[in-house]
Length: 117
Image (cartoon, rainbow, N blue to C red):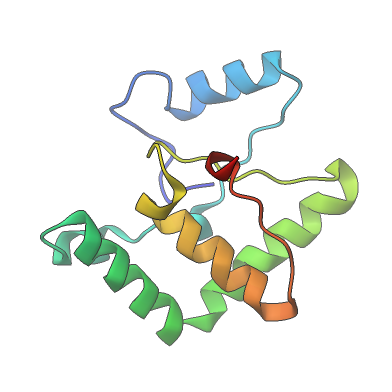
C-alpha cells in the first residue's frame, strides 16, 4: 500500500513486487491512501521531521485513516490478514507505522509489527 507504485529500489516497483508476492501466495494491492504525500515529504529536512509531519497530517486529516480502514475492512474478510510493506528496516522509521497505529487506536485493533519479534 503506497501513494505511487513506482520505486527506484530494485524489486519494489509494482510489477516486481507483485510478481514476487504472487510466488508466495500473497496478493498485492496498490492503495494510494497509505502513501505519504509528496508535498509533505518535501517539507521535512530529516527522516524524523518527515515522520513528525506525517503524524501531524493524519491528526488533521482523519479521513485518511477512515479510507485506510475501508481498504482493510474490504480485504480482511476475504483474505484473513493484511500486511503493509515498507522498505525501511524498522517500522518506527516508516510513515506506515504511524498510519497503522492511528488505525489501531480507532477501535482498539491489534497491529503486529513484524520487526518487533
